[in-house]
Amino acid sequence: RNKYTFFAKVARKEGYHYVAKIFEETAINEMRHANDHFKLMGGIADTIANLQEAIEGEDYETTTMYKDFAAVAKEEGNMEAAVKFEMIGKVEAEHRDRYKKLLARVKAGTVYTRDEPITWKCSLCGYLHEGTEPPEKCPACAHPKEYYEPANLDTDI
Image 1 (cartoon, rainbow, N blue to C red):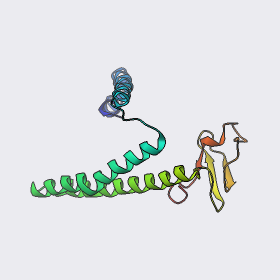
Image 2: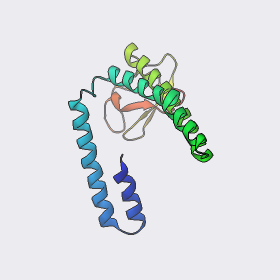
Image 3: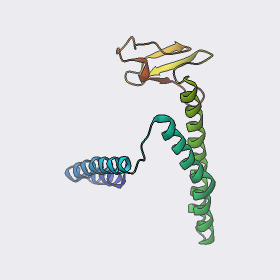
Image 4: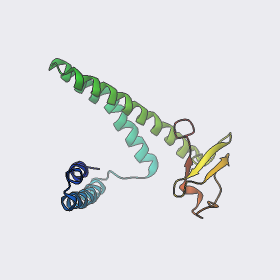
């Protein structure tokens, strides 16, 4: 997502659907450009490297960036912004911790296996399956197990 996605929502709300469509098209174009630039800079690797990069980025945001933003906002007397930055820093910590769990699972080869049964959800059709791993193929839509995720991403990631 980028600013054009947000601009499109405003345009649509104000009744400018044609303008919203142009903003949305531009948002897609800009995302493609960013993806290409990121690849050229070597910023996209395998999943393990990408998770490690994500952990580092989220850790910086929670331990440094948003704390610094909050400190500046306080110095400027903008307590509303300071509180928001502190809250966002907490969210970034959750992102970091989630990525750490995912990295451990990818490294251990346990993304699609659990020691105890959980509820797995097909991310395409919503079919639910109880077990230590998802079925090889979704019985409802026939997509492979790679489309399954833990139904409760808060506890079963």
